[in-house]
Structure formats: C-alpha cells, structure tokens
Image (cartoon, rainbow, N blue to C red; front, side, top):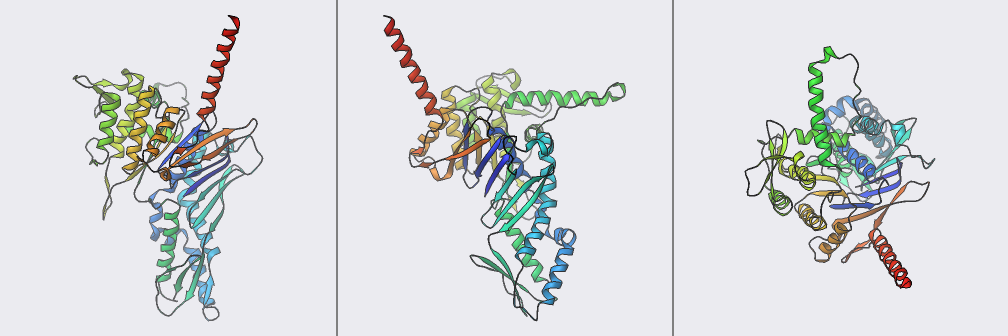
Length: 464
C-alpha cells in the first residue's frame, strides 16, 4: 500500500510505501515533515476502521438500490450474454461505500486539524490537490473541489466479470480478472460480491484492518502532555462554574493526531490485559536510557518516574528534559502498544503502527544511538515505525544496523524532503543496499563545516 500527497499544504509531492516496516523521513526544518506525518496518520486512522466489515448493513441499507439495479440488469441479459463486465458498477458501489465509511470522517478530521479544507490546498501551485491511496488491486484518488475533499475516481487493476450459471461456483481470481457467478433467485452472488469488496478493502489497508493499533507520538511530547493535562483540569473546573462566566471562552484548536496522543495517555488502563511481547523494549528504554522505571498513577492520571535505587516517584513534569521526552514513549509501549484486545470469536493481538516525531529530541548523541537500536528491535518484534529525524547519529546508526544485518535494508525506507524556493516540498526515496542508505542530507553540512574550519585555519596562518 502506498499513500501519495500531491500539492497538499506545503508539499508538492510525497509518496510513502507502507510495505516497509521502518520508515524515516529526513529534511530541514519547516519543510512539511510533520504535515506529511499527520496527514498520513489521519488517512490510515479513517481507513482502518471496522465499519467496513458490517457488510450486511452496507448491503441492505447503504447500497441496496444499487444492488437491486445491478440484479435487474443481470436478469435482463441472462438469455443474451453469458459474460458481463460489471467493473464500472463495482467501482460506483465501492465509491459509495468509501464516501460513507471513510470520507465523511476524514474530511471532518482534516478540516478541524488544519483549519478547513481550503487551507490544505497548496499555495505554491495551481495544480490539483490530490491524495492517492494505492494498493495492488485498487487505486483511489481524492481531490479537493470547491473546498471539499471528494472521491475523484476509483480504478480497479482487474476486471470484474459475472458469468450466468445454473448452480454456484467459487470465485475465480485470475491475474487480470475476477469471475463471480449469478444465478437468478440465488443469494450467493451478493455474498461473492461482498467477498470481492472485502478483498479490495484489505488491499488498501495492508491486510491489517482487524489487527492494527495506530499510535501517534508528536514532537515536544512532554510539553504537550503537560499542557493538555493541565488544560483539561482547567476546563473541568470552568464547567463546574459555568453559571458565573460572563463571557464565552474560545478553546484553542488542537490537531487530531495530538489530541489522540493525549487521550490515549489519559485513558491508560493499568488493569487491562497486556502482552509481554514488548517487555524487552520497555526494559531497554528504562534501563539503558532512563535509568529508572515509568509507571502510571491511576488516581492522578499522571505518568511517574522512579529513578533506580530510590523509592521516589516523580511526576515527569519535574524530571529532566530527556526523561520527560522519553517517558511518553515508554508509557506507550508499556500500557498502550502492549494492550491485548479480544474479538468476539477470536483473540487478536494488535500489530502496532507507531508514528514518532523526532525520537532523538533532547537526547545526547550516545542516547540517540541507543534509542535507534531499541526502535529497530521493536520493528523486529512486529511494530511498523514511521518517524521523522534531524539526527545524523540516527541515520548513521541505522546504516550500521543494516550493514551488521540486524535489520534487512529491504524492510527500511528513508525519505528526504527537499524544497526549492517558491515551490512545495518534494520527497525523494533514498536508495539503499546491504551497505545502507546514501547520505543526501547530513554529509553536505559536515563537509561545509570542515571546509569552513580549513578556511579559518588558513586565514590564521596567513596572519602569522
């Protein structure tokens, strides 16, 4: 599955291949990395919801008239044609399903997160602002038209063929076509159509629709958590005294990925069943970086830090900047990512997708190397991590881990966002092999500093 942004906000072109398990986005400041991360997160959030799987409701209520019309057409052609191509009909039905299950919520989310749909149109180009969701079987193109994000087109990479038959036959999946069978008066046709719909939905959600946990850890994790935590208490107090308020209060706008981050930390359930799959990650973060333990106080609803060899429990807001920035990451792995949920008929452990902005923030270079190692271990345990970074240490350590075969280069993708004057940012996929990724970002800066040093030394020598 790929997601492609074209002329969205500060971005001219950005394509992310989600088949990779570790994705790192590099680039200068104020170039659109966070924008791309937030937009991608919201796309996945509203795609990977379980409304799709209530096919009985969808078939009976949402697209019932479309199905009745299709059935009438098939009955009318039964004596004339043995093979009927219903690809166009299927694309219309799929469009209607996505409009109701995905697009309505996604539109509202984009609008509230970025100050209206109009504001996400590129100011650098007059070209169409589009979002493409690309699977192996299907491609969806969303387009901004009259301040609204609409489904511009859906293209199947196969033809959907209906064959008339006296009895039921199984669905036949060929390379370029899928064949289902229609028997007037039978119900199997609609069951088969549901199966094809489900297959297409799984295709655009990386086959993880029922087993994915989506998480977003923003930059300035500690400050944001502390501010929103205090702010929520203020709102609670104001709500008790609303009869005494003389003026209305305008609440600040908070992007949805940030509010999701805060809500998940605030709603931690320390009693819920947890998987021990990520215990190693938690222990490494606590022992190697924090030199202490992270816990969640169920009464105050705050994250606490206990330094090793002490009986202290310190609110993370009172700890060092390094501890306060890493603590939310530990809390996510300890209480949220490790949470095991159950389905009615089967136990399913969620496979997490974690967006992390600048995990190296406030860390000494040595600690940056350690957290890179730990995140790679998390990937090997089944996490999919998408992160931004400004760190050459993260970049070089990742290359060393690839060279030492701690992680296969085919699992990783590095992108660099670049911007020309008066144009939007363009993401370049950095090529890789067994020796890692080419340095298209930090080497230029290092070389410039070295040349500057040589020039200064030459000038000093000339004065002697």
